[in-house]
Image (cartoon, rainbow over all chains, first blue to last red; front, side, top):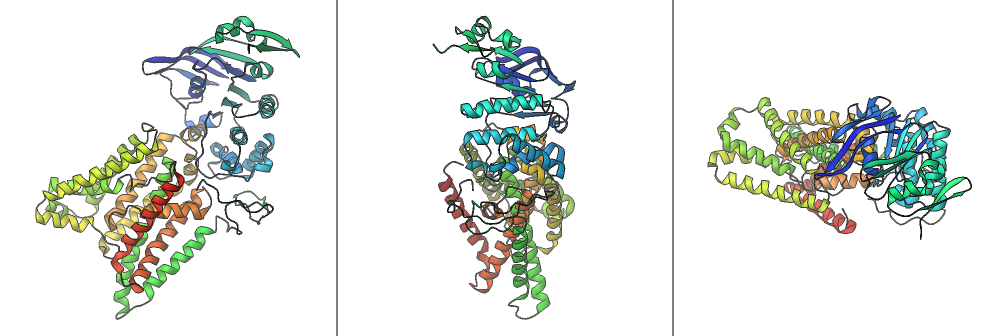
Length: 252
Length: 354
């Protein structure tokens, strides 16, 4: 369970976030949606303690992530940012192995190797495991980073736009994998998604941000309606139920 | 290093044992993409280089002795000691510095670390006079001096690398400019010194690889060993730091703290090397660049020993060759700096983006 309370962040006298008080994740898959500049990434970054808030706190099962030891938080919460430029010459397997660092301190034990193998397999990277990151396509690299985050074996996983760089095949598979991570591995997953329909199809809960505040939250059925989406995105949206999933149409 | 050499022909595979400690699984038939020939296991590379370095040391110590063997050995042992300290300090400091700044082109020397040391020394003489420097020789003074320099360097460079200068070209420019500024300030201060003070200072600043005061050697070894232990204990964290601030934080490292510790270690190492053998701008760069190329891995457990062994090999081997084959014993730093400088320019031009 991730709860944020009174969270604000200001850049150059301009409030970009908050105040936000919200149960951000109560289990399952939670998607953050919202227009550009709504503060989705900022919220995720602060929740993942990669940036400090100006006021407020983030509680992870009662643990203040900005006060607690970083290594302690790393065993409970994994976070992946949007851009992950690795300059070092690292293989996929080595990168995923880094995910074990909070547990192993860098020396991989048999148990860690197992986790790495499982994460590689989970993301269909076993064949690519000895390739260097700079020999991969953007989508493969993205999957390698997600594998690292899963190998970290934390109860909570935060992902900033994991569908970036992925074609529809891999985007669908990625959402399916995250769904499985939530269902089978019991992870609580929070992700920033740009595509409303992906969020609607796979999430348990959707949180909509606009101008740095949470404007609505609820199940996909509650959130994917012309009223809510129109308000969040300032764009007329029609919603059709296709295959039992509310689907937003806004292309013209 | 990030650019991959030409891929071998399809199907060209060479056996290589995966070097993951703790993992019993060994995969053979792993495609080798870096080098067409079968690659030596990364763990063995520093061992091989270490053996070569030892051979170089043995050659330098034992061959071409004319006259008293004991006298020659003592003199040469001091020189070897100085070169080993310089190799260790420069090699380790540069690798660590490049890791925490995530840049293969910057080195502490290029960023003005040793210019800062020279300035600190000069300022000390200006403020307290050369007699003070000479009178208060010994451990306490050296420690205080080093501490002051380390504190200043750490603050300055932590500030520089705090993300304020996102552009690396700007960072490089700032570093080079700072180095020049420190140098100019030192030269100016040295002009206003009395001749005696200037003399005392020069002896301290312009070290030579082959003309080292044997008395200062044990201290330098001790300091380097201390810094070495600190760095070695953090070798796994250094691996993680290469992934960048966000990922390192996500994996549970206190990035700011790790950066500070690393920069303190770097300034201690550079200070001891500079104090012993004088400033060397491109030597560290040369060693670190070669080590990253030869080690074939990002792991510091391999990189650091490789850099150290390569440094010893370069300095001692180079000195041996210059002294006994070209009869130009004083030229080693010049040659090393020239080669390093060429490599620096080559890498800059080849990579374009830093």
